[in-house]
Amino acid sequence: MSGLMLIAILLVIMIITSVLALFLKDLLAAIILFSVFSYFAVLIYLALGSPDVAFTEAVIGVISTTYFITTLRKLKRGSS
Amino acid sequence: MKKVYGSIILDTAFRYLIPFILLYGVYVLLHGEYSPGGGFQAGAILGIAFVLDGLVQGKKAILRITGETAVIIAGIGTFLYCFVGILSMLSGGNFLEYSLLPIPMNDVEKHVWGILGIETGVCICVMFTIIAIFYALVGKEE
Image (cartoon, each protein chain N blue to C red):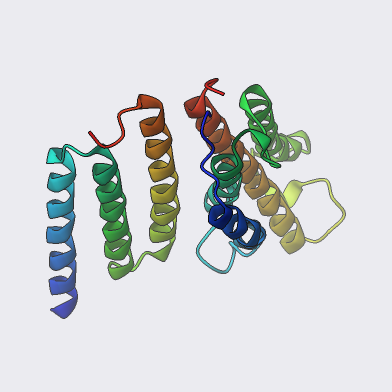
């Protein structure tokens, strides 16, 4: 039961972060929120008992954040 | 890049971080049989080390492997995977049938070395694909 509660709370946090990331005007903040989203996805995979998938998700979260920030530098928009 | 990200803090942290990241990547690759991990994750971690180098040191990075060179090395990784598979086909088995690999060992050792071979191939391919995508994003802005 407590396991289900934990997963439910994590899912709600994921929904909140993703909706916030969609509606923020500051692109850097949106990228960091996306990375937070990925982190909570890692926690959910761990709670569901699949450390392999969680490991992959953690690594890919870091890489995609790096890519987004590199692209943001090329856009020369920064924090609008 | 016009402005390099590096400052003295980033530069010092980079010097201490990179050896451990590389060592952890190799550990994940070689220990993937017993713990979470494997070729893909190890390649991603090793790729992160190279990408960090490109981010912190910019144009004068030590581990700078750009564009076409990275794509060629990624192709070599894919070739390694296919080579192990086709080697077992040449000695009369199916694709990736490790027990028929033409190396003088017993069955278990053949499985271990075959799996290590294809995992290394996957690792090299993923690592250099990540590096190629990163340098394609950085572009020719220098």
